[in-house]
Structure formats: C-alpha cells, structure tokens
Image 1 (cartoon, rainbow, N blue to C red):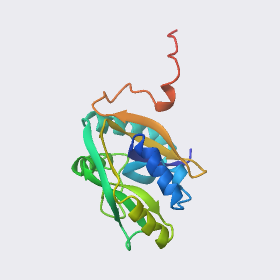
Image 2: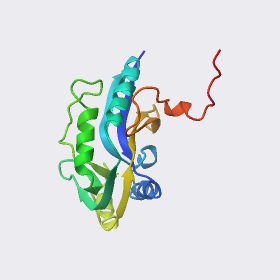
Image 3: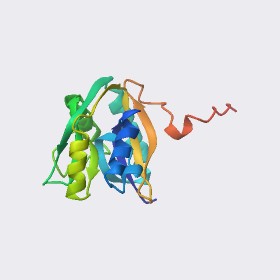
Image 4: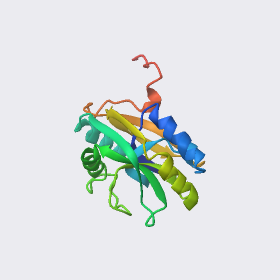
Length: 193
C-alpha cells in the first residue's frame, strides 16, 4: 500500500499565519508556500498508508484529553549553528505544547519516534537559506508579537510535490470516536438505507 509522510502541528491562525508565510517567502525560502505556518508537534514522519486509521484514532484520543490553551509568540531566535533555522519564539504555551507532543509521540502509539534534537516549540520563519537572509529574518521579525487561544491541532500529509496539505483537524476535548475526516466535513450526510 505504500508509505506517506505525515506531520502534526498547531496552525498559526490568521492574520498571523499568512503574514509569517509571506515573510518566510520574502527571505528567499523556496518552500515557504508549501508549508502552512505552524508549531510542530510531530515532525515529518513516514508511516504505512494502512496504519493511517490507527494514527487518526490515536490523535483523536490525544486531542480528547486536552483543553484549549493560550499561545503567545514574541521575537526571534535561531538554532544556528546547530541547525540553519530562524524562528519566532513561543513566549507562552511552551509547557502545553511539550506535553501535547509527548502524548502524540508516545512510545506505545502509532506515532512513536525519536527526535533528532530536543523538542523546542517554535514557528520557523527561515530554514536552509543563506546566512545573510537568515540574519535579515532574525532582525525583520524581532518585534513580532501574536497571541491566541488554540483549540486543537491537525494532521498534515506531504504530497509528492513537497506541499503539506491538511488531512484532518482534532479539536481539544472532542469525543475520540465519530469525528469525521476533514475532507468529509463539506459533504452532506449520506441518507441511511
């Protein structure tokens, strides 16, 4: 059946998400428009397509056990020289994001995986571009601030074109079963026969 590349993240809402995505593109990041602005909970992870139902059930159970929490972004930082990344810092909500990603990646679940680096929630605004462009990103967004209450997270799948697409949203506190896939939300219900 093949494999898919999955990611789990908290979306940065509008108008902040589009603003940061456009900023990322303006710094010369060629992948900016293929990556929705987000806070990662599960980095790109390969999974067997036949395991998707178990992944979706696991994520629904994780979401059901959490409630909405406040997130605040403020200023910039960098992982350089360890990793070529400039990011907007999380000033509020770090503990909640850390707990959430631990549950998503639980060793007993279908999304279990080791991380390359210790988990540090953030919003990437420049990745793998020239040092000069990363310096511009660092300075341009040093005064950036945004705050909101997040009510859930989402599952994304990376297409063969490298673009990340929303597969399903997981609202906090919702029952773990009977939640429709994101793609099904726009279709009218099928009459019972």
